[in-house]
Image (cartoon, each protein chain N blue to C red):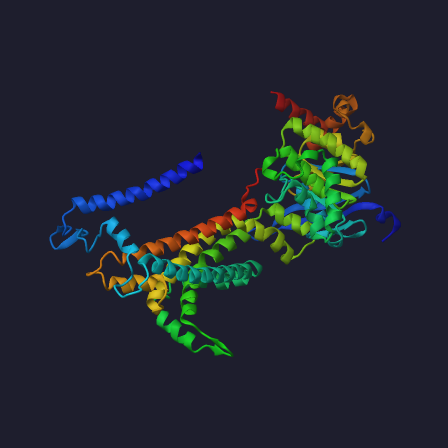
Length: 275
Length: 289
């Protein structure tokens, strides 16, 4: 591996994914997708349903394997990276184990990887504080709101201090208020941990607010339409004020236009929406 | 308050049953109700339906007229203890076997295709009818100081009935984790065994508890019936048959072991209920968002 690729968190090269269909052929979910994500960079994948954004994230996580092309994570194969626990992961469903307390849920990956009891406890306490669940360590998931459950899931994904976080619409099931608060917190967490993030979403403001770069995808087959730089500053700038900022609105429009194809058709689409 | 109400309703149910018994006995004709030659409602003579008070009185009297004969109720209690011990052994064996079979089917898809039909089919074999055969095969088993005992044949037959709900319940339970949970375990790079231990087994508990209850009921029924067909004395099953033979002269006597059998069932159900309470934390349901 060369020096430059070692600095990359994720490198996706010419990746395609075909899911076998019942009647021969197959459904092409991704086609010729290439994207590099630098260490510490926050990249969102955005696109309509069925554009393969979740599939792409699952390929990076080695939960599925690509039909063609290669994926490297920190210079290793995706499989090796998974085995080495180079990433933390969070899904739309918090996916907490209902019989475990908040603390035990956060400790799960540590326990599975043979971390001692004392070290596990210390790390869990640290993370519970970090995600602001101070008094809830001994509660069970069914006693928490959706937003709190998702915080636990995020704390769990951070348990082993990964340099890469993979998040598949983690705030998709939350109400708008909770969602914005969680976004602000994620921006803060990301600044504190310095991890690279691959973030799947279908919310344009969410992608713009959080990301260094937004990857816009189109459906059937999933392709990258455009990669947009956000240039909205560091984590310290990701405050609620940013949501009112003109530059923020400008970037939101840019992503929307990329999603709808050329600017003219995007304008038509907007017109159609307002009619 | 809720618990008190439940207890009161339970007691009311038992009282109602007693009232029905005595009420029917008082109102219906002694020869029962016949349509043509067919008896559609049972006879109410003292031989067929003794008064509850008579049954109770009989339970307090000695078993036989012989000198030094213990009170009937102690003999029944002793027999119930004997039966419940065998039922417990067969329950444990059935649960272990059922759990192992379910694990095997979970681990290997081919094992599921190969075993599941046989597991289902196994329950259609009237093993009670094969009891004498089981006894004879058992008598051929010797190794070292170990000799096959008749109670083991009874336990074997009862466990054969007990394993079935456990294997089916556990199999469903093992398959119950959400896809996200399985993805998570894969992302953690852990293999089948730790996924099984940390995810599948705890997730199976809500399915397992009702299966364990069914297994307990099957173990009790299997034990009582197998005692009869194997001819094992000492338990309530055999006692019911023995006392039924004196039915014409001493009709109240045979009811004591029947109540003994009911007691065995209650003890078994209670024990599983306690187990369910102990597993309480695995029976929460996750409330999503």
